[in-house]
Length: 171
Image 1 (cartoon, helix red, strand yellow):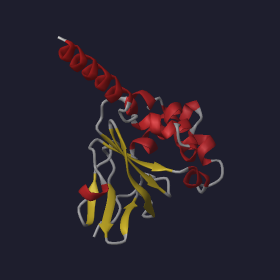
Image 2: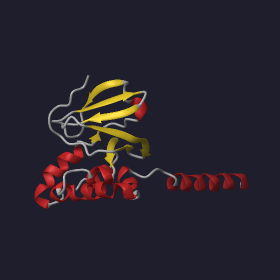
Image 3: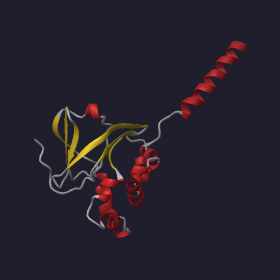
Image 4: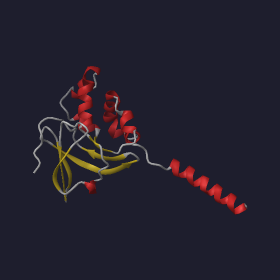
């Protein structure tokens, strides 16, 4: 009887530990990182925080604050205005894939990927030097930190805000 009681107690303790040790979701990770404060503000303004806190899976190409600061002056402020919510939402959905894609799962070479902004494509290139992403402007973002694992997907930190536009060249 005492062994059964000890086993039950141990199982309960393990289950409490496992619950408290679970990974945070994508939004919780972003909120906890100062370098994503502009991204978090944009996600909240677009009303996407609840979605990106959901079960996923999601792969988020997350621009750091410096990437937003590099946009033309006034761009972020304009996108954050309530009347531009749809445009902001489109830009943010361009940064999200509905799969859990770790860097090792991105095929070598250049390939088109369809983000949640389904009308657009990204060209993602993986090679020995790392992973780059061409957006609708034809400019490249670099994945500077890959594979931040969340309980509902993965975050890849990038150094440029991805902007929709023309279909990027991918060869």
